[in-house]
Length: 459
Image 1 (tube, rainbow, N blue to C red):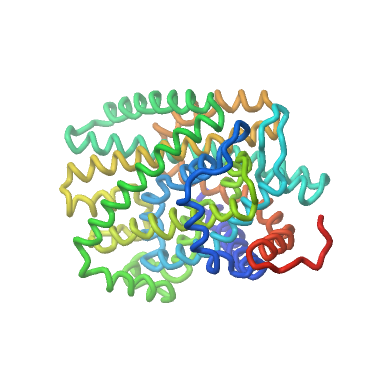
Image 2 (cartoon, one colour):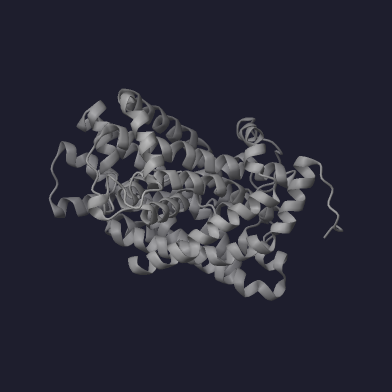
């Protein structure tokens, strides 16, 4: 599976992300740079368009942020550094800058082709803008996306996140009381049962209940993580200039200086920076558009600016702070391997002590992981309903907690490998739609934000 991942991420996803990001940047007039301040104001001005139908814009954004602000910010960033060297952080930034306009386009299209499902609820996402934007004959492509998106939710958005959340708690317990293999398994099983049951109960309330929970969790967990990673960086501030220089320098070296023993260089830095960046912020996967497609938005281009903020908060801010905390702390990095949360835990331990670091990491990964499970549950539910109607949604509600339980006891490597594979496959139809509908995105963006009237008749 890892060999397959290496092929499809290097030769498909990476070129598509870079080309699509550059193409949309040109067609949208570099919107992510010219309207960056406006995107930040949209995120902080509060809730609008209150009503009885759909979920609010704030709840939609909180659900989308909950799915992106997950263990990928901690474990994914650590793996990018270990597998790609320091230079991977630079390419993670580049992927994020291009990912901003991609996610903006995904949300805009989701609202542009928003529908009412069989129960009268608002719904949108790649499967809908593929079918309605490209034409009815492309419905099989929408079905393909929905099927693999549902699998991605069960693997990346559920099993991988639950695995990280449970592993963090068992790791914290082990700091106070050593666990043998049997005790660890029983603890993971107990935690998995409790968390999967909680997720199932919340999901039973559909998108509105998930939106209310994530609106509370996202600011809480993000603020605490932001504060403590900043403290670690400040305590090692003298190393910050060298680390920043090393990130830029090693992004272009044939062989990374720190990772030379593992044979790491430009190719690995580019590959793992983009790969883990996409895992973290989901730009190109189209999943966040499903959450925003359920929102009662006013002006679609205005609401779509949430996509820019989400990628910035997830990757430019939190992933960068994670990377700087690890690199500035000077903890040994096992280049060529795929570590879990132990690198950041070691960085925290150098400042706060081992037990305090274990407790904080347990709390962070638990909140990040569980909120991502909740956010992604909405995506899978909408995909199941698109494929099989209301009965498909009911089956998904039963299957989701079962997969959460499996993820809590499986090995980390198997879960992440499966998640990477499904993520890359589900992106294929989404990129086709983004390229095909880029003209529509460009015209609406230029007209709304830059006052340029379209020379083509309205569609």
